[in-house]
Each structure stands twice: as structure tokens, then as C-alpha cells.
Amino acid sequence: MNDSDSGLPRRRVLAGSAALLGLGAPRLWQPAGKLSPGAAAASCAPPPSFPANNPVYQQTYQNWSGGLTADDVWTCTPSSTQDVVTLANWAVANGYRLRARGRRHGWSPLTITADTGCASPIVLVDTSSLASMSMARPGVVRVQTGAVMDDLLAYLESNGYGVTATPAPGDLTVGGVLAVDAHGTAVPADGETPVAGDYYGSLSNRILSLDAVVWDAGSASYVLRTFERSDAQCAALLTHLGRAFLTEVTLSVRANYHLRCVSDVTIPAAELFAAPATAGARSFASYVHASGRVEAIWFPFTDNPWLKVWTLSPQAPATSRLTTTPYNYPFADTVPKPVADLAGAMVSGQWYLAPTFGQAQYTTAAAGLTATLSADLWGLSKNLLLYVKPTTLRMFANGYAVLTSSAGIQRVVSEFATYFQQRLQAYAAAGSYPINGPVEIRVTRLDTAAASPVAGAAPPELSAIRERAEHPEWDVAVWLDVLTLPTTPDLGRFYRDLEQFIFENYSGSYAAVRPEWSKGWAFTTAGAWTDATVIGTTIPAAFNAGPDPSWDSAVSTLDSLDPHRVFSNEFLGALVP
Figure 1 (cartoon, rainbow, N blue to C red):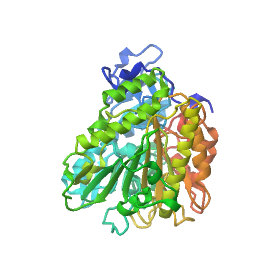
Figure 2 (cartoon, helix red, strand yellow; figure 1 turned 180 degrees about the vertical axis):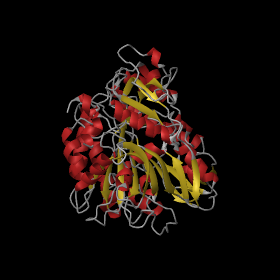
Figure 3 (cartoon, helix red, strand yellow; figure 1 turned 60 degrees about the vertical axis):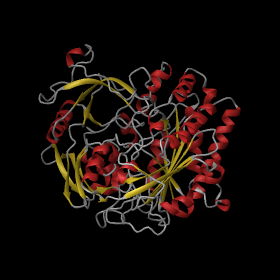
Figure 4 (cartoon, rainbow, N blue to C red; figure 1 turned 30 degrees about the horizontal axis):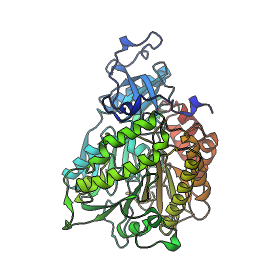
């Protein structure tokens, strides 16, 4: 597979810290202005016979880290679900593909590949106008897929509801979240009794029904069809990787509740990630068992991670600060000048500053928690679960879900931390500093049939945390992410080493690994999504293993619902053939 069809991001030279961090320049995440069809180059004529009631325009697409940029891509903004149906039938008649475009908060080329441009037979579909929501009945919300999680969670809060866990950024579309089985961090704490609507895995497993644009053989056209969760084909659509187009879903939600979040930056990594035989009361697993909701953020070349621990807390603790709004870590959401200066120096070639940069990130977090009184927070669920704004430092990230047992959590994090630290130091000794961002570790439950909101309904077939029937003792997933600035030298080589370790180490009866779809995986020294063996063999095998294979079934279903591959791209053609 070549770089073009693997979706390898094009490298772009960034003009110092201003371009990278948005200081004195437009931020990377801001989309370019619309260009009318008349402004297109002669070689980039507008898509032919485009539906008249849905104007098409050109716009630059850029993903979260800025690593994947495509200029002047044809884009449209449908105002109704019927518009999407019309677009699908136009696409099949004219040899085009449609790619749903949300907030571009992802790394992998599931939406478009880096070689996409105005001459490509692709139209991006901006879903921002498909954003309505309503309470279908108590405990069930109906929401269109263009709505953002910020708005959905605020709407749920206003109606007395919330969710068990959610991704930390709220600037994500519901459709984007569901396409990649997005998650937060939550398992039931020891002694915790789940309430109605509690689901501790991915948000995809909350779906009760969904509307999708699919091919209807009888009418030889694309139509809007409702799939109930009990429908066998629904399992492939719950996490579809962009290989389908969902317009609306109904989700099971729970009664709202209060959380307390306590941050600790004093526990040494050697203690937090200690080997199971020596792990004590301040081990990572001990916090998971005690509270059920934990995240560790470990900056490179530092001793103490930033540990966040959420606990169910109906009453406000005396030491906690009440918060009535989300995003309570402003020091993380706005890049401080010392951190920005160091990042700019590294991007300019001084990559050896990575240890200083790591220490600066830790110091900023430790001091910021005190200065903003945010080390001990209490409030309604939304205000504690959302904590990453689009203004934060943009980095590249890899991602994997390690399926294991609750008893195996400490072993997973200990073995990972030991290997990561050893490789980081080995690279540094050779004068290479490929990692300058934090390690992030979270834990969720697996997506299981038992946890489905519809009795007996299958879990998402392509969810990274889909259960393994032959291992009922595997009840959790440990999510491992490592971040770095996207132009860092040796990035691909380090991630390649780490990925090989992860796939080889977490195996057998102990654990198994699947990729975190929105992040980086399938590494060679050229970068992410370039290893044809991982893409074509390792990943399908990870889903087909055991008595309940799901990869081939999901691929077959998605192909039957979109036989003309209107909802695909070159990279998906290799991943989900």
C-alpha cells in the first residue's frame, strides 16, 4: 500500500510556535472560508448536476492536530435528512462519494485522505444543520447526528439527565462520537450499584435505534431507514467508522447525578504504576476499584503523573469547590507562554528540549490546579466530565484498547509504563526525543450484550471494546494513548516500537488489543496507517478471534447497505474492503 491510499498525512512545515499554537495567527482548527464554485480553478470544476437546493462550495479540511490537511474540498451543508438522501442518490448517479464531516476532531483518515482535493470525486457533508434533539420519553433522548456533545449534555442536564461517561472534549458531533465508539472513563466502583441507564462502555452501546441512509434494492435507490437495536444489521451500524451515514439516533440516558473530581500530582509513577506484586494503596488499579472513574496524565521525563479521580458524591464535600460549568482547567485549555515558547523552539528544530517541555507541562498543571482551585471539584456530571476545549495544545496521538480482567488492570499499566519509560530513555540516550506530550490512561467496561439497553441485542460489531465470549473474565478495557507534536522527528519509529510491544505483550489468555479508531495505529517508520499487515490482517483477526467473530459480519453488512460505496474513501477501501 502506498502513502496515497494509506492516508498518510502530508508533512507541512509550521512557521514556529505561532502557527502551531495559534498565538498571533489563525488557529489550526479554524476552517478556511467558503469559496464559491466560480472561484474554483479550471481543473476543479464543480461537481456536475449538483442538487440545486443544496449549494456546494470549497473549503479546506484540517483535522485536530493539523497533520492531515486537504485544500479546497467540495463541501455542502444539507438542511434536512431528506437532503442527505438526495445527495446519496446524486452521488451514485455521478460517481461521487459523500463523507460526513463533523468537527474534525480526529487523527485517522476515516473521513478523507491527505491526497483529497477539489479534483477528487468526493463531497464533504457538513452536518451542522442536522442538530435537533428532544426527549422521546423518560430516559430516552432523540438527537440528530450533527449535534455537538456540549449541546446534547446541556440539553440532558436541563431535563434532569446525564450519561455515565463521555469523551472529555464537548466539541464533538454525536455522529462522529458514535462512528468510532468514543468513550470516557468509567467502571462500576467496588460496591457501586448501577442505576437505570448506566452504561460503562462506549456511547455506541447506548443506542436504542438509529436512522441511516442505505441502499434499497427494491427501488434501486438510497432511502432513509430506521433500524431498531434488535435488528441484526444494526450491530454493524453502531460503530461504522464512516462506512455509513447516520442522521438520527435514540439513546438511553440516566438520571443526572453529582460527581466529585480530585486531582493529585504527588504520586510517583513508580508507585502509581507499580508491578502488581508491590502495588499498594496508591496504585492505579486501587483507585479504579475504589472510585471506578480514573485518568492518569503522565508528562514525559517527569516523575509524578496528574491523576484525576471521580467519585459519585450526592452531597458536596466540605473541601470541594462547586462548579456549575464545564472546562474547569483553564491552564490546560490555553497554552501558557513558557510552554508555547518551548513548543516553538522544538518545532524550529530544538527537539532536545523535550524533557524541559515535559517538566513545563507538569509544572503548569500542578501550579494551575492550585491557582484555579480546581484540585477538588464537585458538581453535576456534565460539568465534571467535560474538560478539554478546542483551544488546548494540538498534538498527534496513538491509541489502543487493551481488553483484560479487572484483576489485570495493574499488570497492564505497569508493563506499559515500564516499557514506555525504557524506550523513552533509550531514544534520549541516542539523541532522539520522539515523544514530547503526555501518556493518557483511562479504563472502561467492555461493550457487551448484557449491558445493551435492549435485552439480547448484540453489542457494536466494530467497537474496539466489544466483548470476547470465550473470555468472560475480560470485563474492562485499559485505553493507552501517547501524544506528541505532529512534526516530531522519529515519531513513526517510536510508535512502531510501542505498537509492536502492545500487540505482542497483551495477548493469549491475559489480554487482547484493538485500535482506538480515531487515533494513530498501523505504524511503520513512515508514520501511522502505513502498515498493510496490521490494516489487512492484524486488525480483522482481533475482531474475528473467538467464537463470536464480528469483523467479516460487519464488513458484509456495511457493504450490503452501501453496495455502491458512496460512504467510503480510499483508506476505508483498504480497511473495510
